[in-house]
Image 1 (cartoon, rainbow, N blue to C red):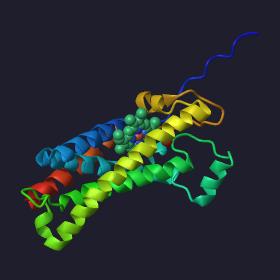
Image 2 (image 1 turned 90 degrees about the horizontal axis):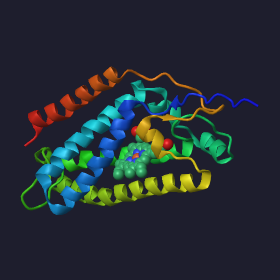
Image 3 (image 1 turned 45 degrees about the vertical axis):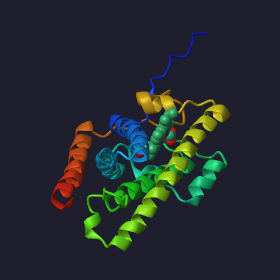
Length: 219
Ligand code: HEM
């Protein structure tokens, strides 16, 4: 009997999402190390870069490829329940994984935002700390410190979920996040990827907003 022709892999994650993801992961590690070591100038520069990445991701969640769009993967309890009953099939984040994606993006936004107004109470203030009262600066600093542990916890959960998925279903989620594709299956529809030039324009706009804003308002 002739073997069935191998089907072409389907695109899951577009290049902008993959670059976003690995840049974010590397910067997360760099933020932790620089924060712990008290290298706060470096910490604030990387923090501004992460804020840029996150603003880009928000825009890409509206204008990007289907698997990048929030409207595709964010679902209510009914969609999550259907997934838990084994009735979900699709490309990209499943409805449960989507919750952890939202939690990570939201918490990292909060971290990048609170860092702008934080202080170490010694010599370094966040670039926008001068805009708020010293009481608010202290509260935002406390939130920033607490948030760093919460973010670490979420990343640990993220990695544990990927390992658990691998052990339970045998599916390798990491490879598609590197190469962008996964083997085609009957259930996995194909998708049309958004233009990487659009991603570049959105990233440039996000960088202009963050770094331009800090140049104008930061101290
Ligand atoms: C260290 C910090 C990390 C952070 C902050 C992080 C954050 C994220 C975020 C926000 C997403 C959602 C992507 C999006 O749609 O925008 C994601 C997805 C993903 N991440 Fe990470 N990540 C980290 C490390 C890693 C590492 C080390 C791996 C691999 C070992 C990994 C593997 C993946 C995979 C496979 C997905 C897609 C999951 C799925 O199929 O739904 N991540 N990550």
